Length: 342
Ligand code: KG4
Ligand code: ZN
Image 1: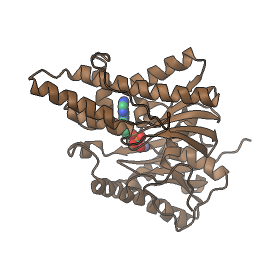
Image 2: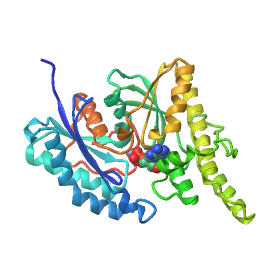
Image 3: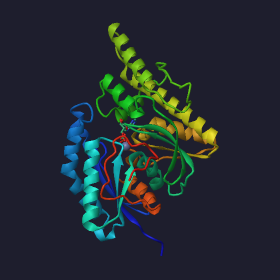
Image 4: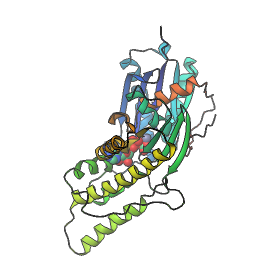
């Protein structure tokens, strides 16, 4: 009989309280996500203290439901994996303290997981045949990383953003054209009826590292365009602004990533993180990879934005590699990918 290792994953690094049970890193037995988006929308973005308070209210219910949905008791769980960084410190601490308490009380192994590693591992869940090595573009609200996944748990960072993350740019531009929070899905939607070539917004390339990203110039160009239009009394064509902004992001992401794929000589690439649920980004990568005979992988949209399935999957590979954390596990809000702290 093949082995069955069941991991309970816990995620609370930002504004989703999530728990999931995943078998052997790839088979989802349950996926529970309690989103706080409606609450933070009132303030136009995530309010850290409110996020922590909501996590502490919800986390027990979310975990109980994840176990029930998976038809599991604590005796069936081989390890608990939890995001311990990067993220909002107060939010992370709720998940970490909960995971430690359960691991202590039930004598279950504890495995801390890097949030971005989780995003990357979402690809294993939805693409059962995917194995490293491959290139992965991670684009979320807090991160933009171009990574070579050399093996399970082994990452080499080729490039990262110098300023705003891609999702942050989506959120800020959306706010400036009156679409509200969270901006990504709203820009995605209105762009469908806009002209992506209406305005030629800048595509930044860094002289000293061609794989690094910068989105602050793009964001400023959009804000500038809006101010000039307002001063001239011109009507803002929200759909065209959104679509042209989105096209600039798509071009930069595809351009940098395909260059990296060519340089590494790898024939596989994946995308991950909340922004990778964007329909224009998914289509652009699909087309480009087909043209270049590169196999393209992406998680289902529900596994792109924050969830605990990805944390349970990453936890499985760390667990198999022998990683165990002790009772002193702490939150590391600015943890780097590949940096392992015990
Ligand atoms: O991965 P995620 O849930 O949280 C972080 O780890 O940051 O990503 C959230 C980000 C937000 O900035 C949100 O606007 C963006 O992902 N996002 C999108 C889309 N859906 C979510 N951006 C563009 N298009 C989307 N469809
Ligand atoms: Zn995330």
